[in-house]
Image 1 (cartoon, one colour):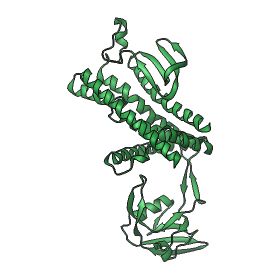
Image 2: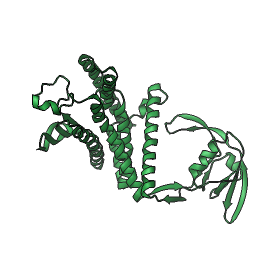
Image 3: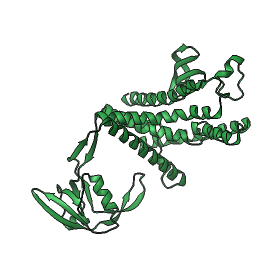
Image 4: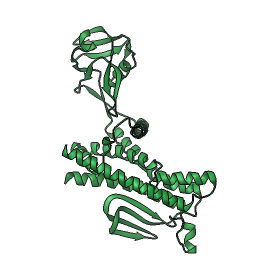
Length: 354
């Protein structure tokens, strides 16, 4: 039950912010909104204010904003034409459509800002945890508990900084200045190229010395408001970049499509994060929000990216894309999404059974 509740919370926050983006920018551009729905299907409850029916619908796996004149061939009363989406200039329509995924990115930035501002971030200190057998570190005499002070005279303050320097060494011997107890020593270590896994689970070769960090030694970094907003934008950018690279690798076949997950996997992950506390759950929401934004920007018909593609073509050619062509593209897009949905559900079920 906790998994279901966590899924509803995560999807509810993501969908609300996504549709809020469409809604607010539509209203700013003078477009009337007939429905603002969290969920699909039959209306469970809601309230009509002005022109808009704000509702919660039965199927909580999405949401939508229904705008006046959203369909190019819709029959409108003359007084509704000024509120029609289709009758607005193409640049306003681009803004309205792009605002949904853009608000998901904004949500991620706001969540990360709050987390960095109130909790700070944690950084593993350059203290040796485990020394791998027959590794360059073991052969050179490095031991568990050694604190790395500098590499070739350059001060290191985190284990990630240490790992980056070693990875860029190209096999050149590095002088490790360490502190062991009260004594300082200099130990030359020559990194070796070893097989490793990157963040996408791909086999890569990188230079390593064969040590892992001690999880017991870390420091908390506190941020000013300016530092927190800078860090939150950087974090959102980093995740966006990884997501785009991952999609490209998936299309090229460099990584397995078995890595894709659907609502069941999201429910499991959301439930696990919720058990770890609110900060972990909101960190997960921010991560999924970035993923949702990038996926929605893909140029697939029925997604926001597909509509943006049509409008960009219209902006360049100065005439709308043929309605019949749009209909065919929408049908293809729906077919692709159905196949993708079935595939991720299959992946989720196979994970449960394995």
